Image (cartoon, rainbow, N blue to C red):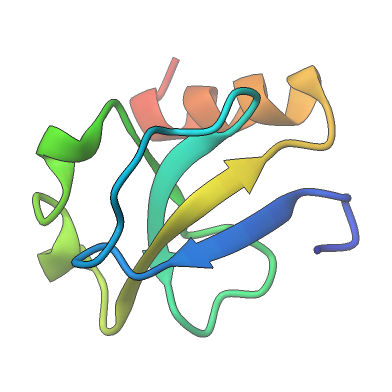
Length: 81
C-alpha cells in the first residue's frame, strides 16, 4: 500500500493462471518502486514482456487504485494526454 492508498498485489507472471480481478489493472513496474510511480498499465496478458526492457527488475501484479482521479492521472501521464 502506498501513502495514496493504491494497493499492489504481486504475482508470479510465469505461474499465474486466471483473470485480472475486477477493480484492478494488470501492471508491470520496477521491483523497488514502493509508490507505483513506474507502474505501466497493461491492456491484457498478451502485453506481458513487451515493456520489460524499460525496467531494471520488472515485476507484475494487480493494482487497485485508491481513487478514480489517481487512475486517470496515471493514464494521462502514460499517454501524454
